[in-house]
Length: 295
Image 1 (spheres, rainbow, N blue to C red):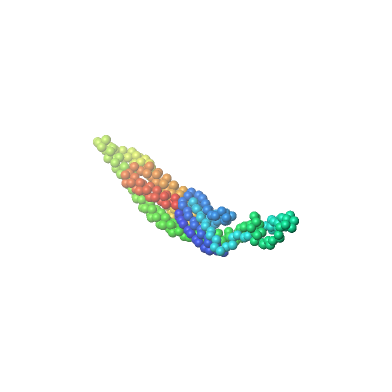
Image 2: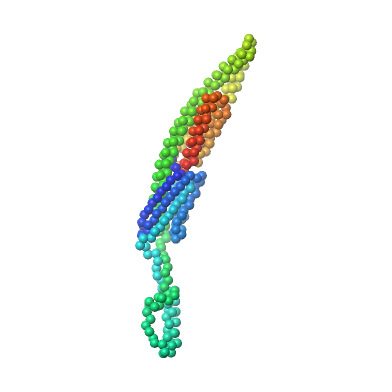
């Protein structure tokens, strides 16, 4: 199925107390260019997210936005610096002894000790990085699925438009094929009339007329070009039915179709064929523009 390189997908889920939102946006590009923007605390999962994008998208500029909000998750813990606390206690005991009985021994509570610098340290709780990465990837897969669905719908429209233009090109090619032999016959008649006019009473050499007509027919013959053109059009139709990404192949084949149309235009001096070739090139250019957005 043909897919467009332009698409958008969004997914949001709450997993293990975390509200995870992932947005995927893409536009056309010659190659795959993936950019992931996420909170610094979750940067460890960037490669995993990029890996999922590479499995689902083969071409285009893809931007992935990841947002994580914690809901009821104990992310911090309070730790006691036991070594420092014991040092404070020993120091306080020394201060009391230095009083030499002149200081009254008072009560010393844990709350008093907690007020001293660096006794309590607030640190972030250790997280299961593997589990968190799996959660981020799970939501990313959902966003990529929505992204692929949108690209598929857009791709169907692109393919339908290309099919219509291929039909138009085939119709124009048939007109060129029908008209091309007529130009040779007309040229022979014009040549005969011109020679009769010039020579008047003299006898016209019929063999010379046939030779000149044959030379002209060889110059303006487009049989080979139209055969190749029809072959390219058949290949385009086959590619549009492929389930694999064919954007680059389509782009190359369109260049070949354009080359054949240019050759036909350069060979023919007939006004009608020239008009048909102009219309043919216009259809080819429109297909080329559409192909630029096909994955």
